[in-house]
Amino acid sequence: MNRIVFITGATSGFGRAAARRFAAGGWSLILTGRRVERLQALQEELSPQVPVHVAALDVRDANAVRQVVAELPDGFRQVRALINNAGLALAPQPAQRVELDDWHTMIDTNVTGLVNVTHALLPILIETGAGASIVNIGSVAGKWPYPGGHVYGATKAFVEQFSYNLRCDLLGTGVRVTDIAPGLAETEFTLVRTKGDQAASDRMYQTTTPLTAEDVAEQMFYVANLPDRININFLEVMPTRQAWSPFAIDRD
Image 1: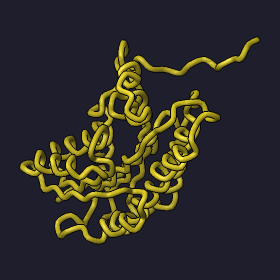
Image 2 (image 1 turned 180 degrees about the vertical axis):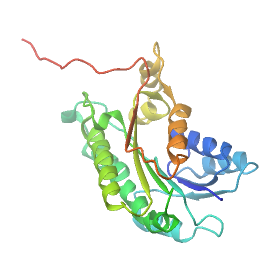
Image 3 (image 1 turned 90 degrees about the horizontal axis):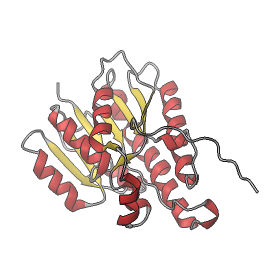
Image 4 (image 1 turned 45 degrees about the vertical axis):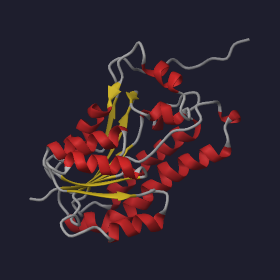
């Protein structure tokens, strides 16, 4: 059986690691992202192993999403797994000090982009039927608030509830839906969040042992390869060295 996975945000972090993991497992790849040169490099790297189709895509653009899906070439149309990975965090400062544009960018990418891609691929996934999977990449921030989380955490709470509600609507189609919620993981996440502050990114991960992108990609691969009868609704994955903080108390 030709297993095909459609991955958004494949140019770095979890998405790039997922592309490599699914390729190692023999899946054909549809890789999308905004950085064309990275997509081309990944295609060159992985195409000796499996068929690879790449498409430059900003998930915030609904028309572009529809076009990419409509123009999938023969051999790539029967998508079996959708990995909704594209997303970002910005503005780790307190909410009262954040630029409104940063909030809009997170909502447009993490929420609007997610629904754009899901809506475009739902007919294909339903046609694929039993064993098809939608894997949405959430975050522990969607369940556990922290200072500076504001809109990012809210967008990831949306991912969780959207995943659960999709499960209800897709009952009987055979299509499975999973929200994977990683904790601290060392990728370009903090570098993007701090708009290129390498020192801040280094501080976030030093003196501890975070998850790797490959750790999270392994969970995606596991979920997508389960027997058709099994659906993992929610999978929260933290580093061993991360847990929850006590409640904050403001004192005089």
